[in-house]
Length: 389
Image 1 (spheres, rainbow, N blue to C red):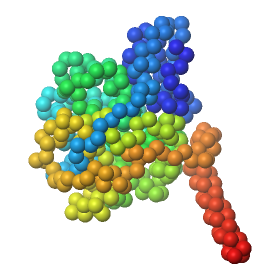
Image 2: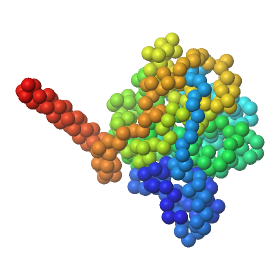
Image 3: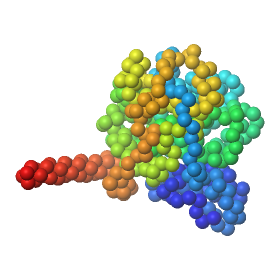
Image 4: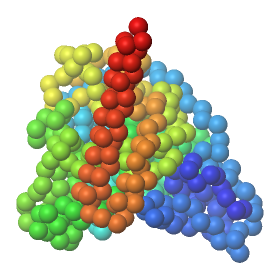
């Protein structure tokens, strides 16, 4: 087996590595830090299982939403620590109370974002909050299967491609598996993140060992005005608004995303998951009574399992039903892949060779100049048209 799928399609979901009976697949980073499968040809038996479990080699089949809701957790402490309305915590806590396990993205002791198993409520805060980076799956797909085979309920939270990888790896449905995905903008490269942290440390007079877990969606200045906050072990921190922070500027302008994110196989209003969670952007216009700038969750329910879990925590929230299509009106990333910037390759080269702020300023200035040139050409064409008349 020379290639499982085209490199530009690979999401790094780890399904192939987890399924390989010969253990001849390892995940290796490229220049940007993204992980891709590497096959040891000497050990490969050419069984083809890796290709069978590759989710992007299969037709995407999702289900239509049964219902959609705007939700706010009653517990203000839970809501304050959450990126939006606190729904992940309510749903995950319920599963833990039933003796199940929760699996999601968390920072490990080495500052790496990984998919982690949580079995105690005290550890649940590790999984809270948005993380604008791709988590490493590692062996968690195998661990998930072991829990399912043992009869434990598993609540698996991840991006749509991670859910796709899990389901493709399992190869059969499990009644005790609850999958929850998110609306994903795309995942920036690990190299971009590491260079950004180096820049923050350098400009703050700190060293990497002093870094604490970041808050990508700190709400001290409100939900709409969220900030990326980087804390240090001495109690100090750096906090910038999304429009001022260089990492967020690069991310929101689609620079340095994984190649598969520019043509995502999983972009659809129809989902493979049981529940989808997201920020309810536009709630101030659609359901103003559910907006107070502290965070409102959008919940889309896709299966009876998802509905049963959601209904079981309704007493702990304020919620209002909404039409699913209306709910997604301000969340274009649910169905649309990120547009690849023309200066993307320039950005990746600049990140490799220069300081992070230099790389971002280089591409943003070029993009701004290109927009001005385009506007000037448009005005010139209009002027010529008027002269011809």
